[in-house]
Image (cartoon, rainbow, N blue to C red; front, side, top):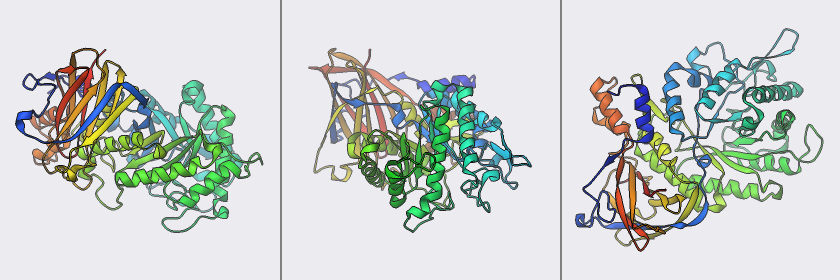
Length: 549
C-alpha cells in the first residue's frame, strides 16, 4: 500500500512513468509492422500550423447534486483534494443555491444552502454560512462557480409551495423587490468575501431548466408550446435578477436560462433579451453575458442541438458576442434506471468526452464556449470517482480529464485519411485533435468511440500519426492510454468479481490499475516528421506527446 494519501494523489495526477525499451522503431507503440495489424486511419498534424486556441475552460467543467450535502460531506473531501491536485477542472455548477431543507430530508440529503428567511414581521434575514462552506470547498479545489440562483426560498415563494425531487421550491417570488434584494445581498457578500476580481470570473445563472414543470411552475414536463403570457413571471424574475447582481458590480457575468429543450421558450427568451420591455428599467431588452442550455444523448444528437441553439442565438445581432454555454452534458439520462451504468464508469466515457471536444473543434457552426459534464462526484448518475472503502479511486473519466489538462494552449492542424474498404465499419469512429506548447512540443489526442458498442468488444485497429514541423531529429515520446486495460479502475474491480468490500491486496491492485502510466521513449523525425503507430481498441483514447521544450 502507498505510504500516505498524499503519495497516492501525486501518483494519480502525475502518472507513474516507466520506460519501455522493446518497441523503439520509428516510434511504434503497441504494434509494429511485423504484427500485421492493418492501418485504419492516418492523422497528420503540423506543429507549425496553429488553427485556434485550446482552453481547458471549454471542457474542464463539472456539476452534480446534492449541492450542499455532497460538497461538504467528510466522505467527499478526498475527491476534492484529487480535483485540486489534478488541476484538470475550471468551473462547477450545482442546483439549489437558495433552496431550504424540507423537514423530511435527512442531513445527508440536504441539497440547498438555506440563505434566506424572514422574521415574524416579514423583514428579510440572510445566512450565508452554508453557501460559504460550499464555495470555500470549491475554490480551495481550484474551481470557479457557475452559480444558479435557484430554487426559491420557502419564505419568498409565491402561493402554495411546489417542490421538485431536490426539495427546492419551484415557485416564482411573491415579492420581486425582495427577490432582487436577495440577489444583490448574495452577490455583495461574495464580492466582499472573495474579492471583485475573482467573482468577475464566475458566472451567475438565473435558474435551472425553467421550461420544465419539474423545475418551474410555469414550465411543461413534455409537450406544449410556450406563449408570451406564460413567460411573464420568468422574464420578470430574470430582469430583477440581472439588476440585483449588476448593481453590486457592473462586471458581474449574468445569463441563462439553463434551458432543457423547448425551442419556443428559448426563442421567447432571446426575443426578450433583444426586443422585450425590461420589467425593471422599462427600456428595451435585457442584458445577458452568456446563454445556456443542456444536451444529453448520442454525440450526433448533441451536436445537432448545439448547432440549432448556435443558429438561434447568432441570428440576433445584439447577441453576437455573448458566450454560449452547454452547461449540462453527458450520455442519455434515463430516469428509474440504475444511474451507475457501466459506460459512465469505464473507458467508454473517456472516449465519449474526446468525441465531444473534437466535435466542438471541428464544427464552427455548432461551437460553444463551455460545456459541463453533469454527474455526482460519488455514485450518482455521472460519477467522477467511486468510493472503494475509504479511498476515492479515479475512474477512467477522471483520468481522461487529467490527461486533457496536459494539452497546450494552441490548437494545431490535423488532417485525416481513412483507408478503405478494409475499415468501413470503423470509419467515423476514430478521431484526433492536436495542440502544442511550442513548435518543438506537440500533443495529439487519438480516440476511438463506438457508440453502439458500449461493452467495448472487438479487435484493435492500427492508427498512424504523422507529426510534422520538428527541427530536431530525435525527440522524446510519451504515450498515455485509457482503454479496457489501461487506467481503468472499474474494469479492474470487475476482474476481481465486483466485490462489495475490498481486501488490502484488492485495493492495492485496483489502485495500481487506476493509475495513468506513461510509455516513454524516443522517436526519430525524418525530414522533420515523426511517425507513430498505435493499436487502438474500441472505446479508447491515447495522448501522444512528442518533443519538449
